Length: 527
Ligand SMILES: NC(=O)c1ccc[n+]([C@@H]2O[C@H](COP(=O)([O-])OP(=O)(O)OC[C@H]3O[C@@H](n4cnc5c(N)ncnc54)[C@H](O)[C@@H]3O)[C@@H](O)[C@H]2O)c1
Ligand SMILES: O=C(O)[C@H](O)COP(=O)(O)O
Image (cartoon, rainbow, N blue to C red):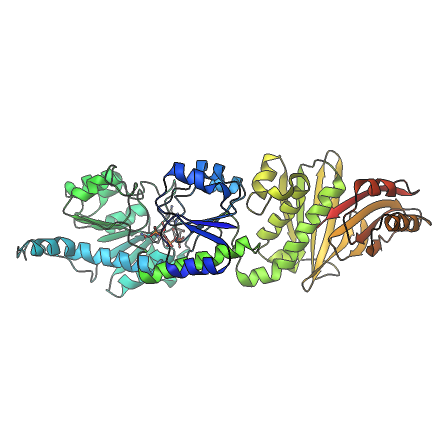
């Protein structure tokens, strides 16, 4: 399989990729047209912020399984287009946190003490001590917008300068903020009260232009603002105007709407003496680059080897300790999906997933995805995966619902999947015993089936001389039976027979089974 690395990646990560035995190609600085050409036969793409992975690039990618971002921000990737095509998008959320936080601190200190300007002045043989009068952090107010990994680290560091920290993050509770020594406030309150403001959110439609002229209008004239997150969170034109007119005292900017910003709204920021700038250096430390390269290399190899993605941004991230508990149910759900969709034997517009007992208290988002993947695979084939299963279900008008209850009867946990539509339904219940999975009910019939690779499900009447002839047909066609289960019902009642076999069962053999007196239908499920 082929891995294309299209931005600079530290050698430690490249070595891991090369040692995995995959074909690794490093080709940086590609235009969109060049990438469209090169991506066709690529299985994994490794990027930083320099590569724009547009819908056009994704459309051209015939084999792509994962886009791995060595870093945090995925705003240079069309994640929706990737998701629709079933491509995993993963990042490395932790590897560059400290470097980005430290760069923010460096920028804040530099703008407080005019260090770049004073340095340039002295190097041009001027001794301008009065011109570069700075300000202290002591007893000042810091406003942090976005209290995630980097925001929290920045807040912690400035608390040691004896600053009061105000924070805004709609996804952070009062308790969490309190535990970090931060008082929650609105963006406007922060803008009114803070001496220093720093933004640490992703760029989203909510955060785009979050800091604009309206906010600069309420800031102190001594306020200084820093952006080491994403260009566009602070409106570039409004910032240039606010600094120029003296509405605020200065700014420090690492990131721009367009990078490099020479021919865009960011160009105005380069002209002001009161705005210091760096060319997107937040993550540019030896340590961060080694961390993110190693993290993304392992993620790429895992995914190409068919193991799960650990840090995908377009499928649920499940903590390893939770994954350990739910992983047999992930397997069970996929198998149940295949069985239920095969048994209904046609279209359906409802999928109901019932989680009973211990499993109902766990994060089961991945189990639900697995159930959909299994069911849709019956119609769509190998083109369905964890990433595109919900989108495919939606586009087929399938309504998915979950029910949870802590009661489960004789088993600690029971998972039930029901598909229904057009007046028909099929349902499968199962449980996990250690790492093994067992189907315990099909429709209304109790069974005890440990799923195998090839299983025949035959509806029949529970009466003499049905099972024998079925086994004979399979034997005559050289199909070895490795196990068999018949649903527990009274004689004369309809039930189900599940025959595990060691090889595929051709259609004509399945048809022959239905000629046996008492057999109502026969279907094969391949796991
Ligand atoms: N300059 C660099 O080189 C560099 C390096 C690393 C990360 N970054 C950028 O820094 C930013 C933060 O990274 P992180 O690792 O801390 O991410 P994170 O996901 O840990 O934190 C982001 C925080 O923003 C919050 N948030 C989301 N929407 C918000 C909104 N509308 N208002 C306020 N808060 C909101 C989230 O709740 C979260 O707590 C990202 O944009 C990332 O791309 C830049
Ligand atoms: O989001 C990030 O991780 C940073 O912006 C770093 O980007 P880079 O990998 O291009 O330095």
